[in-house]
Length: 396
Ligand code: NAD
Ligand code: MG
Image (cartoon, rainbow, N blue to C red):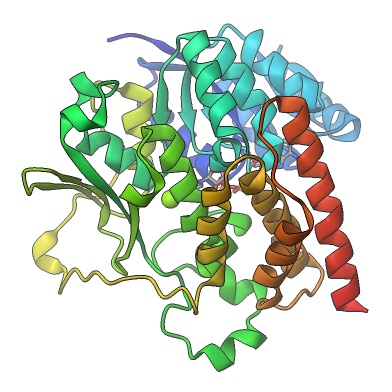
């Protein structure tokens, strides 16, 4: 058993908290060296008191001084830093060997890339990083020489369904024909389309099977999440896009599947509980107790599968389109979606306008090769501006 020294980017979020839940049960296996959060200072303070990291990072100076004060009162020697640069410091200067990349959205890209370059074991939850810069990210992993373990449940499932000793072999040799990403279809799978116009943020965030952060919950309702995951799978597993399929599976028991040339389909099943993929990534190639209820198949009435409806879920079609175009189109898709979802959650943008904002933004920004991080970040901020302007016009 190796002791793993862990940094968690986004420790106060849904994935971060689940990661600490797994770590808490295995103090002999894991030591927490860095914790980072955006604005949830009190929750981060509690985590610091419990796990005593060397470094803690928050978004801004105000938060840092509040956190420092609390930690001083508790006589902790944790160094408190703030800002985007400090996220890189948490990865590169904390002496960690494992990084959970669980910041939501584009904000997580730069520190995740830093972990890749530094040769860490990267546990990747932050799918937006791969969507924006898949090529650069995979190159950085290769140059750094670390291990990339997908945490997104579908990708973690596929990783488990591939022969481990051959993960780097050509797929032709392995006989992999297709990857099947399963999707629950979210809370509005059967809602009459006429009722979708009045959907509220709380309705959109009430996922039938998974408890997640608000942004990914809305993405699951629109199925943009599955679109981002198709792009994520494309980069992680290196298969042509047309070999990556989406299947609606409302029960969320089969987390994804691999179809092989000889007729075999291998599936990974389990409870819809992120602690399973998190524990798998943390301890890989060992398996540890994740605190997850055993799956009782006899108690489930049925498992069902169907094709997704691209009319009901236009975001899925937009993501397929951007994936096909390639270059910076997926980064534009992602940025426009982040802005549209934030406007839906906080500024009254109607639910059905989310795909419209994404589509119009994609139409206004031509794709170019995603050749450098600087270029990708510039396109990201351009797309944010264009999307914000589109929303302003809608609200007028
Ligand atoms: P969340 O909103 O619950 O948590 C996000 C975390 O990131 C928080 O710790 C927050 O403080 C931090 N953060 C947000 N903005 C930041 C910024 N600008 N700078 C620094 N830190 C910032 O989100 P989540 O549901 O935990 O999702 C995290 C990532 O994991 C997302 O990319 C999501 O797509 C992916 N993911 C989540 C789940 C899930 O079950 N929650 C499943 C699969 C993949
Ligand atoms: Mg997923």
